[in-house]
Length: 288
Image (cartoon, rainbow, N blue to C red; front, side, top):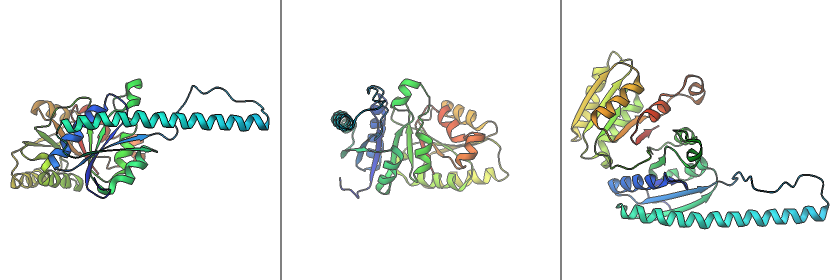
């Protein structure tokens, strides 16, 4: 895989969720006929609680010796993390290739997750990211702390995946008539990722005056592209309605716009994107 070749990038950490990220990454790469890259980002500044207490006044010679010792310990930890990461990525590469990813590469970087992904974004068609990661194994949080920050920072589609893999066969589009939602419909219509899937398009919440017209436009775009399409206009709480429709229709993947409001507004009023991610038990293709 060349540096400038378009690809699918699956971001993995050393948690049991990584297997499912690799599975979905292989599925996306196979459907889009693109190479897959598995990226493992090692934190530059891991929290290390096991270091001895070196506080207090020490002499110059002792200080130099201490700095040398700490440097050696840091290098040893870094070397161990790299070797562990290589073995981890090699196993995931074998898993992805067994799942049908024709060309799979691995990459390991030291750094901060969002910054590293932004550096890679130019030649990525789709990012694949676990909804939860290593920190969730200890905290039991239902949504990883990096998800919103990463989605806001990248301008590419991101598939946020669940804790188990099932190859998607039926898609649901959460449609609100916005320009972002319309682009999402056009993306689904044009993408091999969804080819052959029945599409259920849902407009939920407070319905606009031109709701039927908007849904008719979306249906036309999808049907002209050869999709079997059903639609629903349903008042009520958007999160609850979409979650109910996913279950009722047996949908395997949700497509939706993501974080269209500012982080400050989300802080005080909450985020529909976050609410839907928590409610939906299927992988979600997030569009910005």
